[in-house]
Image (cartoon, rainbow, N blue to C red):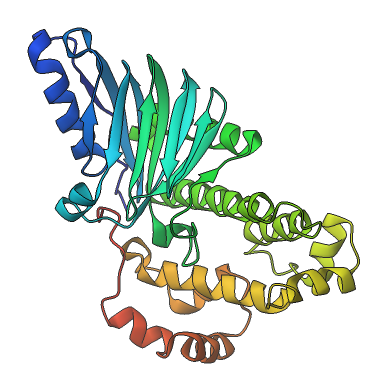
Length: 323
């Protein structure tokens, strides 16, 4: 297929009269991301620019601007409903991120994520540059981003996301369909990995949390590897399989069932993806390490109440242009 990712779109307030710059900017921000309420302490001297591209279902934007505040309020949610995730990666200047009565500060090299279905706020006390990823929540996973909580990334996750985003922006016009899908999956894997880190942040004093988080990261990164098993996970982390099983059991799940569920979820996402309609159901199943088409079909039917072929024909698709 010859489908390509979108070329970079560049927008700047530089050529506009001073009085028109911030109103124009507020409209651009809403059109690029979601409906927001924006303000700035100095409209007369405001300036801003963005560079934006769309890689499959991932929107990538490089933002540089003056001090401002952007709020996702109940009114803006009603005006523009959305069920996306917004990940922000700070390059210069600080940013205060608030959601669900929590506020954190992220500095250059750090990042965080919020849900657009919930109220949130970004406040920039001075000039800044920031990379913003807009991702459908369904792409990261059905259990992604616990409602009402923002997720602060580790520096290593922020660094990987930043480098991937900058590379994608620079090469946006050159990616073919299979490359888009690979980049999309890389972003979703990194964001799911960051989701696992939330466990250790929330659980705090629980000594098993970091082991569980590391195990979930390893599962997400190796989901398509048929060698993925409880023993492989335990060996990678450096614990016994019995200890690993106990840590998962404390959370009401089993290791092998977690692997199975995540693989089914990944296959479901691919069956919904209109760009993969050329792939057979068996090929999709095998790409996620299922080795028996009939067994996959039975497992899918049990998990989702409908056989994979009927699910695909039902029109439950994800279009890469859907927001």
